[in-house]
Length: 161
Image (tube, rainbow, N blue to C red):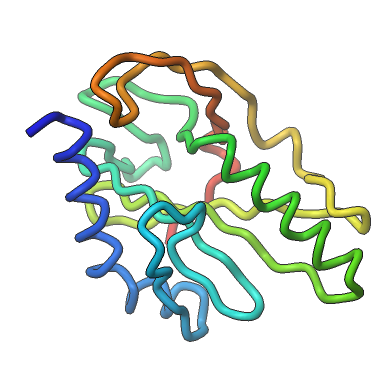
């Protein structure tokens, strides 16, 4: 089994195990998205939540985050998720509907950390100082390395629960 397949299996199990915790964090009932390759794992009428499980990352008591003993400045997610959120809210707004709230949650060594994409009245991201873009080159499940853009959210912009 490839590392990607192991990580994917871990992530899918973590989604099942985390539903009740996420409902408690966000104080609402959430539906688990049944589509295997959905951009966000959980949803309801008001919010969408993407869960990233990172068992090798640890939140320290001083608020810093470590990966294998090294401090890291940010946690990342795939940039297509941000693109989906912007497009989704733009469609909702143009149809005269209320925009949704979008959250990225990292489950790090059993602890939940989250960041919310904030939108302005035109459905553009307004908390742009919270993150930066980066290209990563790794195997994303196709058996070979490829480049993909990710969004890195600065640790000091992430909320611990």
